[in-house]
Length: 93
Image (cartoon, rainbow, N blue to C red; front, side):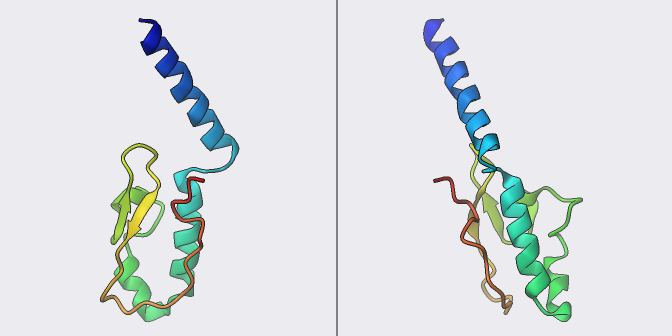
């Protein structure tokens, strides 16, 4: 029982630290929306799932980790998009 309580406490502290330092999926969402805004108007249609009505981890080409729900993979190959992607994407350090 003691190990379970310790695990719950440590998990809660880790969650608070992630929130305190802004390391949430919202950081990734904002960075990807900024990337989308840099793409040409005609190309944005392929990123139509990238909006606030869809969960970030369900966006086209986005894969998230199970534990923190942060972006772990971005696969936009073949979409011929251009823009700068923030280095903060999925950065848990």
